[in-house]
Image 1 (cartoon, helix red, strand yellow):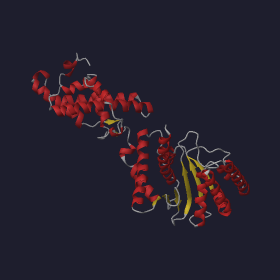
Image 2 (cartoon, rainbow, N blue to C red; image 1 turned 135 degrees about the horizontal axis):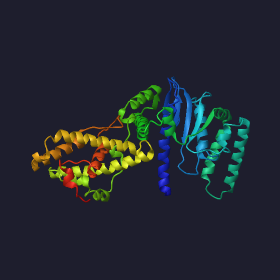
Image 3 (spheres, rainbow, N blue to C red; image 1 turned 90 degrees about the vertical axis):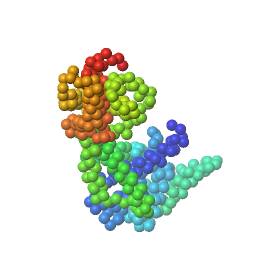
Image 4 (cartoon, rainbow, N blue to C red; image 1 turned 30 degrees about the vertical axis):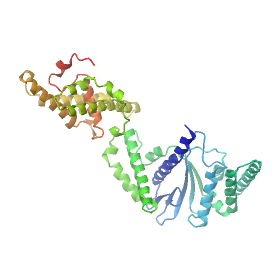
Length: 410
């Protein structure tokens, strides 16, 4: 990855991580509490009167070896400056918990972890020693040194406000959150084995979209982004009771990757396409039907393999579904083709073919696993299954499909 790309990704990753931490903080919120984003800090927890109970600095690193809050980092000492200043202004007080959150493990030898373990007197000595080292380093630099100068200034500021620094250190907590999404789903009890990967993904995306969009809307209107426990609970019940989320098994067709035209063209001579091509139908409608069939066939194959690989369902589950589809086709074949085949004219057979095709591909609904109802966005799986059956000559649209295509070579 180029340095330019790396620099572009880092702020975006931090932006995402901040909202992920905000969501996670909702799961520990008291009944009358609230969460704020970018009000007094990256994320904060408030009581019913608006007092700051927890203030959180969120630092994200995309570097494999990188970490936040290093001893001489801007992230550590700028955080201390922000918190000290807000203690002076009365925004925070001695009851406030100060939290440094990052997505990377922090060394046990790091100063920030020592802050949480040693008494304040020893910590001051360590900070003073660090300041001496920074000044020594600055004196050895022949030019530049702006970063070191900035850190020295921030460290000196912290040491000049030891009474306030002590409040922070006595109430300091350091958290490493590698997978906030997984932690959040665990907290709301939506990460059990009976939930599919798609259900978990849809649930989390709904919550994440809710907080991001509402923050943006509030900021746009000049309001603070503050959300109560009631706001979160209302959204929770709305999401959890949404069938398209809690019952989701398959990805929506629009969420699947585009298929290269060269791959699409390989299926132009497939038997399932040939059966549609031979329907007596308006040319443009038939062309669209053939294209849609190819896309549904490919997407269905991709999605079934993905779900089996993940382990949400097995190949046997999809074999059972295919048998169900074949049975449903047979039922409708018997309903539509009422007379003996030899009693129909060729024109009548062609009409039966288009009628059967439209009934199966456009109208009928079959449940997967006895409880999942396909939507317009996921019906490609059902259609793809019927198309696979027609490709194997297990079903067809023309009343004499087996005879008509028995010698067909793909």
